[in-house]
Image 1 (cartoon, rainbow, N blue to C red):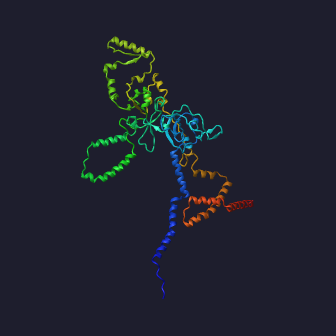
Image 2: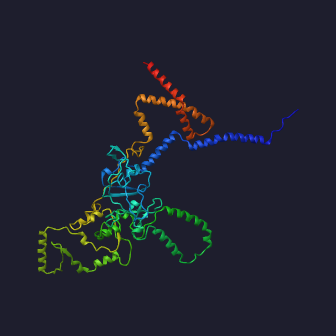
Image 3: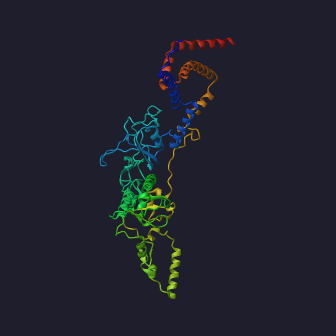
Length: 522
């Protein structure tokens, strides 16, 4: 009796490995397919989410340039790609600013600086402040009467450009990097341009407004840590050693939280909810008449750039104002008709004096009253460089007499609230609209299908069915092999499909056959 030789011990192992290797590509391809591929529903959902994110970032219509509207208070952007600033601030520079729509449509792929609102500004896109190659794509070209291709137009000569257009901000002239910037910067209301000694609505760090610099908090923390040591070594206890590991972990988490938090405001700087606007020390120095309003209704006390012995405190000023006493208070200055100040002597309590006062009162009633100057009754202005912080009703407290109104007239922002231009919301500002105001891809597809005529709809369905039949064997081979379909596979197949003479011939014959059937129905 013969027996088959025993199977080699590795035979079953090799068979197992072979079978596992055979099935492994399918498993890997299924995993790859689930990770990399997506259904039509997934694509539509992702597309809608992307368009929702775009609407949130750019909610306004970007169809029209604001240059035809003229000078506006509007959001302005500087393009550092088209107008790169020189390394030295003393070198000549031709700055330019563009409106919101042009920042997206004409400079969307460029490096932009968001300067936020500037008053009396006209968009520079498509003007001589850019090269002829840097054209505006939104305005109508008068030569061709078509949209786009606008260049070399004359810019508005009234536009003013401060250092912000070089991506420099604050008195420290820092290059602004939004992802690295910590804390809040505040924009000056602006009384003058950099040409007149003002700042031109610049942005400031709180620390720079009080003379401590942009990184004042870091320096303060270092001083505090050095002060706590006092040059002595800390004592070490057993309890401290045991808790060292826990403390280090806690400190690490605390430091991470502190990095995310904004640094506190420096001492003497008002809280953000205490003021609505502010005027930097540059603008206050350029127009010193406004200094007298510091600490009066509508204005917070002066925030000094540098405190020194020469700067008198508000308490000292108040004592000096109250110094003359009761008799001194009764000696006031009044203005006669010629505008000269006269000292009114103390009036005796006699009956003759009383009659004289009555006669003077009757004369005053006959003379038309002249509006009293509020500025003259205010305490003397504090000395030194300081910024003014304004409450929401500060405009109601300005003196508007014949002497003071000429100081206010050149600055309309001091007389009434400014209106800032905002582009209209995009037509797709609803839940499923797009930034371009023409609906999402899904909405546009549905709308196109609803509006197509019957003949074209039938032709479209026939073309779809024909394409479906041609794609079936393509998808089937991947389904049987378990491989995921890649982009290159699709491109290759459609290239073959476009060059397939037999497919073109079959499609033509099918069209003829369908045509004959329709004719036979009559």
